Length: 125
Figure 1 (cartoon, rainbow, N blue to C red):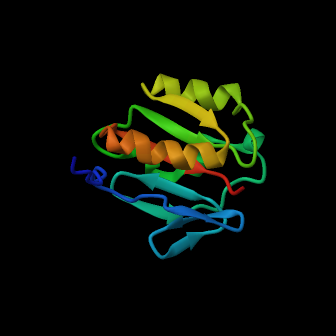
Figure 2: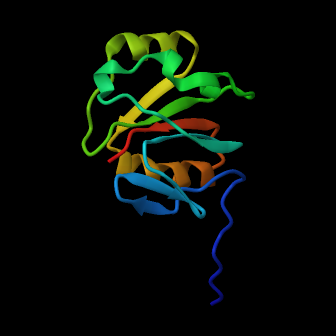
């Protein structure tokens, strides 16, 4: 039997953790990151999930084609985002999947492997 490593769908891959941040290739995103199929940028994430507002996501929500949902990494542990934040994204036709940031980093790769059209906002660990 011949085993091969499958290639991930196009776009950035979170390859690990560094301190409280995330490693993507050779770069470390210590303050959090915003990620979509086309790229990744540093994110000066809010100190707490409860302070999260859609405007803090910049152009992440405006990519084309529109994302199915936002993968939200809430830090060291799962914290539910503000209901108004979720409602605003739902009104745009986008779901919100919240989980701790380590789980979100791992889920990003799995979901992109499935070629899901998603975006991510990960608060630091």
